Amino acid sequence: MLCEGAFGTAYLALDDSNQAAVKVMHDLSEDCADSFDTEIKSGQAGLNHPNVLRIIGAGRNELCLDGVD
Amino acid sequence: MTELAANGELFDLVSTADNLNGDKMKYARFIFKQIADGVQHLHVKGIAHRDLKLDNCFLDENMAIKVADFGLMKCFAGTNASVLKTKCGTTNYMAPELHAGGEYDGTSVDIFAMGVMLFMMLTTMEPFHEATSKDRWYLRLQANA
Image 1: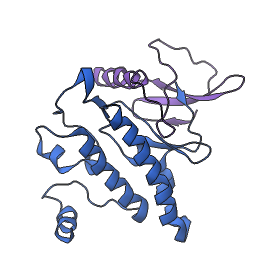
Image 2 (image 1 turned 45 degrees about the vertical axis):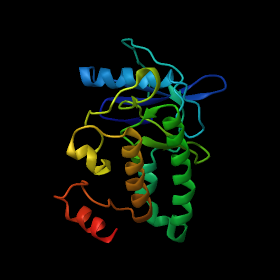
Image 3 (image 1 turned 120 degrees about the vertical axis):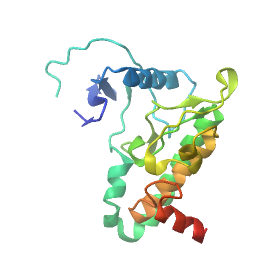
Image 4 (image 1 turned 135 degrees about the vertical axis):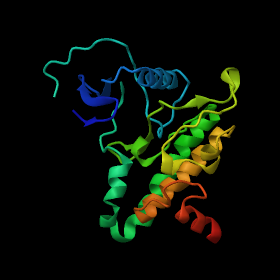
């Protein structure tokens, strides 16, 4: 686990060559869902800059995080 | 899922900035330029962030700044053009026109928030609690401007 915020928890994710951060929302209220949708849009807005955090992907699923720490 | 910013929030770095001694100015300049570059990119793409703050700027493994948290961003140009009216942000970073209500320029309120961030980087203190005439620290800053 990287950190815990008001709306979600961020986890460190690893694959063979890359590291990424995965933010899991635990607040499913409407405000939070709106904010999530807006954030996803930023990933589609053509943002590409070394000083802007790159959004790799997003999805809306009930996740099972057993064993994640 | 986002790219990883391994060195965490800029807020945490600034909170401990007293340890940087004489290098604080150098650090602030190095970091602030990157924030300005990132925010300029958003503005060129027609996006106002609207919640810029130290907690929303992250540092990667090379201490490069990553502006993040686009939950309140708004497109103000192009096909999604709109006049911004929604009052939002984090109180002590909010420009006076946001406190006043009504329409505002999304790029201007981002630049105001950047000014607050720069002040905090250099002093490790908030310049004021809110940019309104109720706040004596804000009034004092205005008087000295």
